[in-house]
Image (cartoon, rainbow, N blue to C red; front, side, top):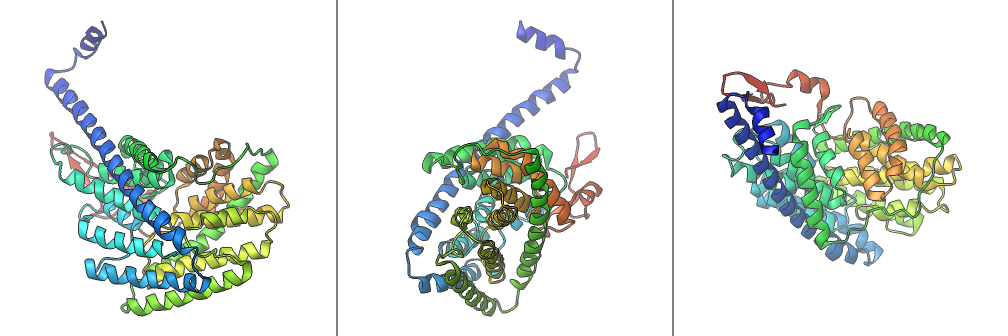
Length: 455
């Protein structure tokens, strides 16, 4: 009976149109299946990458003597710069920026040789304790895998957007490394634009995020990044306070983003080795200062332990503020020295430290709420991804109740951010609607000769 209803419902459609619809449905199914495979492959790669960096490298180096920890990041920077120059001369340190470049420029290919150079550099950078995250290389790896798979299947993707698997792979990389599938999908479609989304990529991104996440957790644990016991409560007063946290976190994100953009320009210096050696010395000095102040190695590694450290009510505002400044300085210095790593997690740490400071300043009893709100605000403002930031705190804490205060803080921080961003490769919503520049205005030609923009 159901089949008869479908036949009656479509009987008025011309035969050739029905054939086109069937082909479209078949191709859509093929695209989704391939996106799922790309997600699984990306999840497998990211699991191996994370296992090497964290379990093999980081967990061993944190046991070393402090003077070794002070100089090790500088050595990692030298290895990263030299490896990129030897494997693929002319390749820069960008990973997330490479995804954005390929998204907006149809002529920019994500080749395997630059990929190998950047991944070796990322292993050297992150494995030596440079204060950056694993999400940048993970996202880049997924984008490279997806982009190259789609290029090898031209018939399957003949009528599809050229960026479908690029976005799907990037989403899977983020979903896997953070064990947050919704965050991966939303971040991949939100980060290319300021104030807009790559909406037509949502379904493949969701499927790839799911399979990437499932593959990753099948190898590693499903434990949330920031597990929180109990259910923190908040009042109307706290919701108003969330907007205040957002304003301050937006200022912090804007300043940090300014530092990082200038650091990226410095990294293109004609004498990269001298810049790298100088960055290594500056990192050693910053590490020493932080070690003398706290007795702990808080300037080494991605910084998840720093978030836990900042949640201790015994810490003073002055010490936390000093670590916030030193962490931002260290990450920017590493970027200037040619480090290859992610900037998502440094924003998370900066937001957590900011929230912890504000929570202490207002003498609030629950620092957890302020820390989580600070993360959502600082991350959302820095990358201009308020939706992904709110999903991130909800998934990584296992507490969806943080969504409402997180949204308020993210909106306030976004307003404070203005037109700034952590990357210059994002397009504004206005520029996106106007078609940007001729080389970025991608057009699809239909069978009847008409054209429609793909962006």
